[in-house]
Figure (cartoon, rainbow, N blue to C red):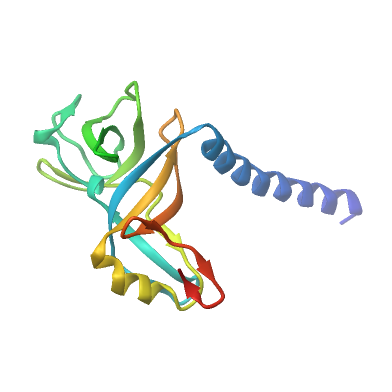
Length: 176
């Protein structure tokens, strides 16, 4: 292969990687910040390092108690969860198959059991420095929350986590 082919391949991968960064930055710059209540699940992955899987209160919904445009939902359905601000936290007020107006999160139904659905939004993993996942997991029963930024298309970026109302920051001695 000649140099032009290698150069084209390099530029192709650079464009793809840059696209991911630009997409997340767009959401962070243009989106609306919102706090979500969470429940952590698991702090370790042998291949990726320490992280926390966050299970949001808005991840499990009963469609009978919300406004909706559908009778039922199936696994793999694209859904839009309309959020209302309740005492400073995002709460689900509706779930739709068609894109609504206002503040909403785009997600995918992972499980549907009658009126109960479980939704994944793509903001369920938060990576932490090595060795910190277990400590945050241990303390999380005292109130773990997440600050997310949501753009006008329903895409979300997990910006930071809070423990007992304080933003979790890391230094070389652990989190503070």
